[in-house]
Length: 130
Image (cartoon, rainbow, N blue to C red; front, side):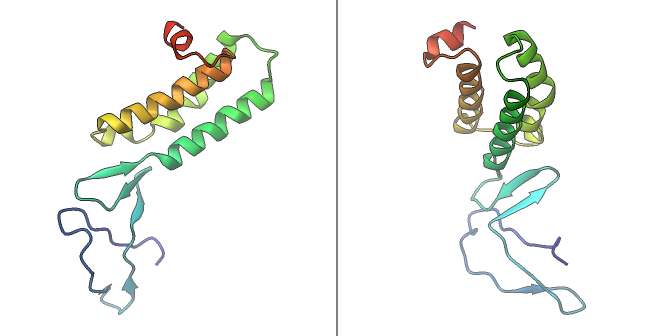
């Protein structure tokens, strides 16, 4: 029964809810965030996704790659592995949502930080050049 939950989206998303129950009398809980087809949907006035868990998983995967290959491999090899194994983790399910400008810049920041770590720089202009 843990897979069933309710979420309200729309102008009345913050209004107090009456409990819902199944025909067998089991109450269905209200949630602020639910996992649906590989992405988190959050309670909001408009349909919106939450990218925080995807970013955490992406950072975890890239750190695992860097921890395994270290600085032994070239930048091209590291980027090839990250492009094949880690980028899909970050972008999984995003095609189902209309991402706004702040969400897109949030994803852009994650990629910029990856390049900063890979090329050992703190200069954003160097990252944009690469």
